[in-house]
Image 1 (cartoon, one colour):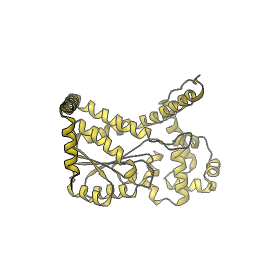
Image 2 (image 1 turned 45 degrees about the vertical axis):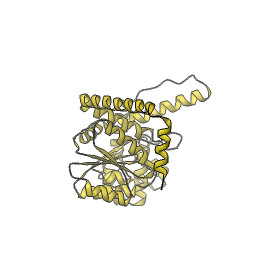
Image 3 (image 1 turned 180 degrees about the vertical axis):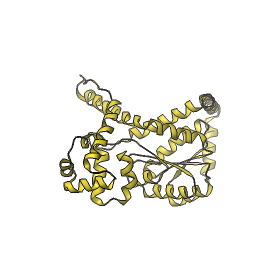
Image 4 (image 1 turned 135 degrees about the vertical axis):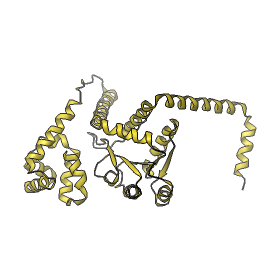
Amino acid sequence: MFRDKIQEQYEELSPRFRSLADFILENTLDVGFLTATELARRVGVDPATVVRFSQELGYSGYRELSREIKRYINQQLALRYQKGASEAEGLNAELAVLIDELSDRILDMKADTSQIAQVAERIHRANQVFVTSTNEGYGLAELWSTYLELLGIPTQAIRAGTASAALLLRDATPEDLLIAISLGLDPGGEIGHLLSAAGELEISTISLTTSPTLLPARQANINLVVPSKTPSGYPAFDTLVALLSLLWQALILLNKEKATQKIKSTMNSLNILVEQRDKVPSYDIAALSRLWSQE
């Protein structure tokens, strides 16, 4: 598959070859209908560079690469369905378009069904799960960690900073699993280095990214890519959240009885806390607050 070949060789590619690789991965549907000359014009290189790029990936030339891209497009189109045009007006009409676009991006994940199942099974088997991300993605890592804990899966959210990463590597074992979330807002250097170090310690690693060429995607044992590009040109994180939700539901299916029991027990605990809050006088709460604020 051309996508796998690009990802595997991305680090060794020249800047011009990387420009071609990025364009092909981000605009695959368009590339399927472009000649070598047209692709070269879109990327800003000469046609000979397109041919050499194809050969660098192991193809006889661009024609062979183009045939594989067309086969990939046909597979993707088979997963899609045609939506009717909305008759709404104003903001409602614009929202209808956005909903259709979101559906298209989520449908793109169907090609990774087997990978998603594989990731869910690895999470299910892990002794402990560590979820890491940088500052902009750490809130999402914490949220997902909470959901995993809800199912009774020992989970810990870790920031991808040097100190926290060192503690993670100290405590993790080969029976554990490290999952990295990369929103694509930076190159992912800290996350990529952590994944690389974890791999050297034989700790299983999984990355969830918006691009297969990000450093975390290239360093993880398994990488799940979700589409983030939108017709408006602004990147979106909705599909990444949808993927996390899908993984969580897959974990429920792997052990539905245990998951149901854990969720029910959690809800009972929440009810007890709510009841206790109603029983505790307000002046006791105020006194406790003053106690903790004392130096």
